[in-house]
Length: 203
Image 1 (tube, rainbow, N blue to C red):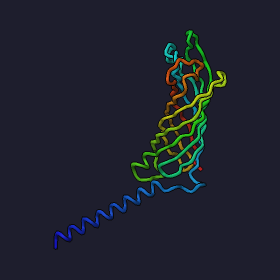
Image 2 (cartoon, one colour):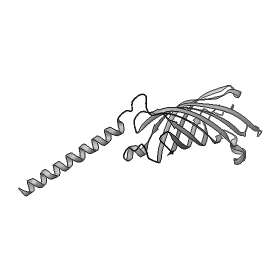
Image 3 (cartoon, helix red, strand yellow):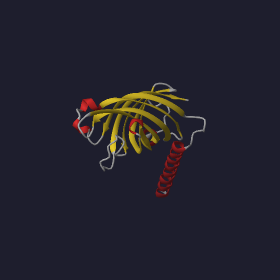
Image 4 (spheres, one colour):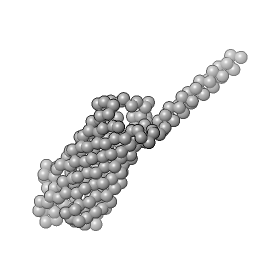
């Protein structure tokens, strides 16, 4: 009888834990209402373009400024999406060793994953959240009359100040087409690295 009682206790405990785990998983994936969890953000920072001949320029001379604006929505406590527009200024060297300076724009759609809510309990008031992101879009250099595809990957570090205000520190890399800087050498592509600091307003 004792063994049967112990078996029933273990089974009951397993059922309770499984039910709790299922409820927690469902809460993480439960969709927010369509009119909630929208946000807009803006940021400024530094940028480094990695082109075909830029390695011949001094590293410090290649650091330039960037600015970006974003808008998006959290679909669930874990998954969100945004549209971001970035304006970047790049400096480096051309094929002849001359210093060059030019501007380009990035337009991309990103998927955001709040790993803190995923790995831990959902907490809307959590001070810090690590949010990896991945996205696709286009890059356009008006002065060079070039447009290429762009692939984005990065990490958004979100610090909650209040219910409506966040501070964002974001680091990301963008892979763009080989000819965006006006020089096509047959390589698979070129890249851009960006570090920005800004604010987000949550509706």
